[in-house]
Length: 311
Image (tube, rainbow, N blue to C red; front, side, top):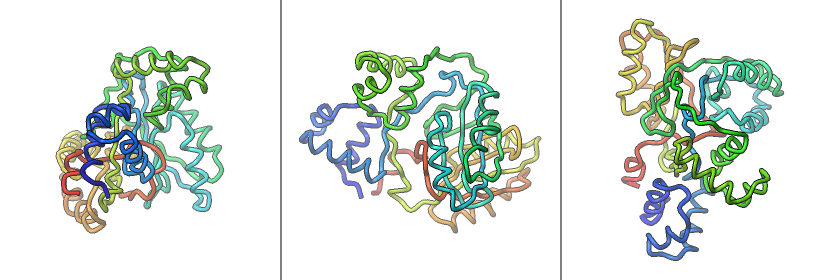
């Protein structure tokens, strides 16, 4: 469990994920070693993560997809480990339901996505079948990534070094400049300059994320909805207004809408799906996938004050 000092550290790191231990210690009025040890424990316990959140529009992303996999269960861990290593796959989790694994991917062209779902993923031993759902719109409440207009032309020109740094910072937002410099054959000053430019141009934002599932006993589920096409936009807006819904994703194929919901327990999830969602005019069918293990990506979370408020 976290205490008041942990909360203060979390709030400061939400403002700047790369804030130095020295500065944090000065702001909090405690020893630098105390700050260091507390942050390390929060990271080790997976209560927090410090990562770069990327802006798909600024990165020139034109194709986004949700992908569901049917996997041989004895091979599940091996499959996930290989998926985690694919740079443009940004979310990997295991689930109960129709799919054993859910993932999301972002690419600059449909050809790149095609290679992922026709060559890369089928080549992983243990994958039995793949379903790909193209995203045409997404709305999220807590800005873990911006609401995306894939038709935008606001992309920033990035080279291979920029791409590598972004991928590293997605895994560890506090990765040391000298280690990154050595890995990619550039100077520490070059790494620092490029990361500052990526932040200034709003390509990435390095921040702290709280894993609320570690702090409270919540159930996280994905709901795939089939809807009346004439009412899909209206239903999407309604779902977005519900406090239980973190994300609303409109799809071009398969499901009409996919939502991510967080509720206190399975009974609450059952009531929400059967009484709230299924009763919406125009909802024709609902499939539920309950998250089991979170393998890669950014934590889904409530507003920070809601998460920390009564702990």
